[in-house]
Length: 165
Ligand SMILES: CC(C)(COP(=O)(O)OP(=O)(O)OC[C@H]1O[C@@H](n2cnc3c(N)ncnc32)[C@H](O)[C@@H]1OP(=O)(O)O)[C@@H](O)C(=O)NCCC(=O)NCCS
Picture 1 (cartoon, rainbow, N blue to C red):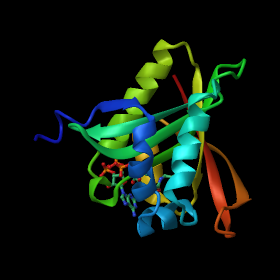
Picture 2 (picture 1 turned 60 degrees about the vertical axis):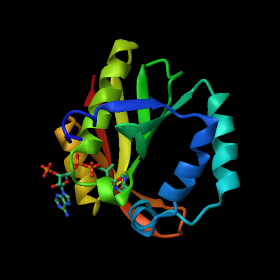
Picture 3 (picture 1 turned 180 degrees about the horizontal axis):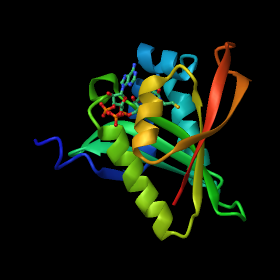
Picture 4 (picture 1 turned 180 degrees about the vertical axis):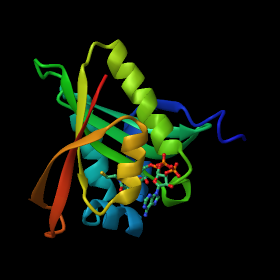
């Protein structure tokens, strides 16, 4: 399969995706990059159910062909100023640094633009250079910095990045 032909698809998450999210979100390097803690399958099946009844949120599976390789999550869909937040971007380690994240986020940006949204904001760790490079390729710029306490208890310097749609 050519890398350029099949990387552009994202589809809405569904209840069968709990197993995939559980494996993605327990990969050691993904946990480390996100400053997250290990989780259990039930947490992901419960989370997907909650997201599906939350009109402020949408979650997408990134596909390579038909194979799930990542997760994009947005929230803030009800914001009056038409600004949404990219709350999650994560790919399986074997699919990172191959342009798939950029392609998937660009697809999401296209969909959000068509739905009338004006801007996307995100938070990222200051030392997550791959994520920043990916977001920059999508047009995001750093607009602010802050320090946050993450799920694993670490206190991390972070950037806020934005892109206009
Ligand atoms: C962040 C993530 C979604 C980006 O998707 P991706 O497919 O890997 O990103 P891309 O391949 O499109 O772009 C990554 C860029 O970072 C560059 N890069 C990788 N490591 C780097 C480093 N240490 N320093 C500088 N640039 C780096 C790559 O070369 C690439 O740029 P290029 O295309 O100009 O060569 C993915 O890497 C991921 O899932 N990481 C783990 C979870 C995570 O950190 N999520 C983000 C939380 S804010």
